[in-house]
Amino acid sequence: MGVIRMQVRIPKLMLGTSPFIGAGQFGRKAYEYRKKFFYNESTIARLFIKSATLDVKAVQLIVYEPLVNALKEAEKEIGAKFFVAATITSGRKFEKDLELIEPLKPEIVAIHALFCDTLDPRINGWIKEIRELGASPAASTHYPGETIEELDRTGYDFDVYLAPINPVGYAMEPNYESTLKALESTDKHVIAIKPLAAGSLKPTESVFTFIYRYAESISVGIVSEEEMEETYSIAKKVI
Image (tube, rainbow, N blue to C red; front, side):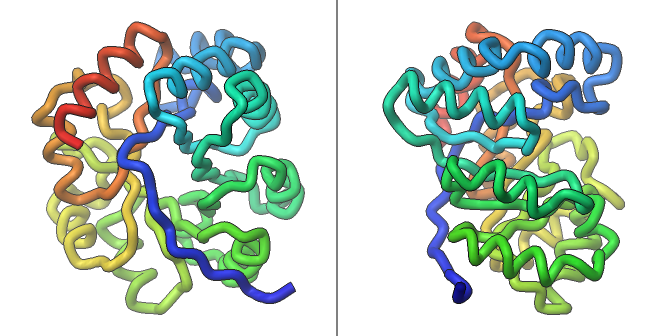
């Protein structure tokens, strides 16, 4: 199969899924979130469905089977497709994870920061497989101030970067200044992750305005329908 190239049009706002796996950045709440969501696909699906009713049919999906199943359930329920920016966290079962998300027809597939920040030698092969799937390849990074410039300089064939961006510099390694410089210099699409600094920031117009200076899209993790209504309503004021 030949390489497929796409012109990516990324929604301005996406539902993030880090809380659904109980990601470590949530500290003491991580176990609570994992117990509530990861082992309850229907609970995740309800939030996907709620997001769609609020006109955000886009998800930054971390590729684990419960989350994939929940999104399939939500799409079936609403009778519509979500825009999917998937992140594969495993190198050992990369191909299996691609097969898992193929039915969702993801527009973007990101390679996890663990591999992008270390310039893993498998990256070019994975990029080819992502394009053959019909998706745009993305690099996720935990060190945007270094990795983005390095990936641009060395010519890796990514279309999109996923990077932490927030006004307090949380997770913007190696530092806030170098991250903003890298974001300003790249010509790739940027999706902001960790916009509310793992829940330490309240959603405000100023927070979203700041992030949209550097990113085309924001992926925000949300754990309740009430939180979703509040966050989306504020974000939409500045989109």
